[in-house]
Length: 197
Length: 197
Image 1 (cartoon, chains in turn blue, brown):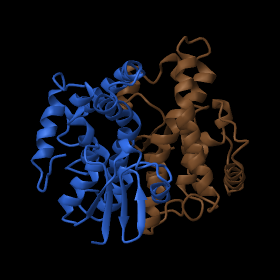
Image 2 (tube, each protein chain N blue to C red; image 1 turned 90 degrees about the vertical axis):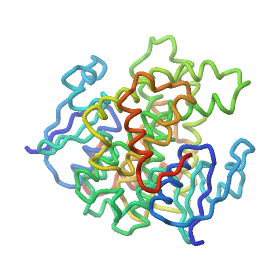
Image 3 (cartoon, one colour; image 1 turned 180 degrees about the vertical axis):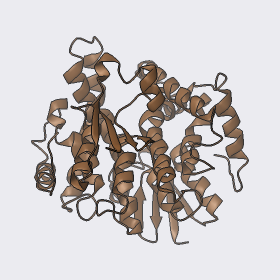
Image 4 (tube, one colour; image 1 turned 60 degrees about the vertical axis):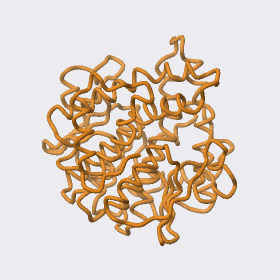
């Protein structure tokens, strides 16, 4: 296969890419990286991504990091990234929102809860992420009160936001008070080619 | 003027947009938002951007938030965003890196140092951002050891990263040990149409 994905099975950022690849019908070799064993910080991996993060896509030798940049790369020219100049820009608006206002709080809380049970800083780290995490979900809830998807139809903006939102409860952000988000989650799950994390 | 920018004068995120607008020769009305007085959280502003953040561009009624999405919108079809599919994707890779691995640490440290002198949480917040801030600068330094700009010639990836890097010392991240970054800063400042923050 010409495409390879350096992947973390439980990571929402990696899942975004696997989901879009599946929906596009693109075969891809999966290379699992055990970040808990430091495999994303080895000299070999840092040659692939000097930022030491996953996922990383290798498309026949072209190496690309940052989950949402990978989504954009794969979605170019497909219905998952609209051509219309304004809709196109709004897709990126929501993907930057995801990486700056959502993922650092909700994904990071999930990671600490799942993988750092004994870390003495855990309670403080989690507490510091509460307010911003809830705020991000509130922004999504209000948008979804008036829209079925984030930008017109289903796009990579939905994929980017779905990845950590549908498992937000695992970061102690249960969605009980967010009925519009819960309905949107069901709409995403009903898309052709959907696969679970 | 058909274009309006909701702007914070000292913010790197707002400056990114002003810099590109100037380099593109696009006139734009500047509407200053005093975020320290809560002006980005008023009901009126939340109608413009429900996420309560600046900058926001209003292009003849089309409203777009997220600084790097605004850069991409304005740069479409110009030399600041390459057409080549791989270079295009790498521009987004670096812009997502900026919003996830750089801005939350370096920009946020600068904000706390500039604007929250008496906050009791200040020392803890700043301490928590040191390691990740230095790591982001190290990734940039290594890339710039082999490249004049982030992706081929000068692009919006450089604008996105320049905004807070060239004032990193104001966040207590002095660039003394980053000679390649300092040389790149001079190359950015030498670009046609450059304006200071």
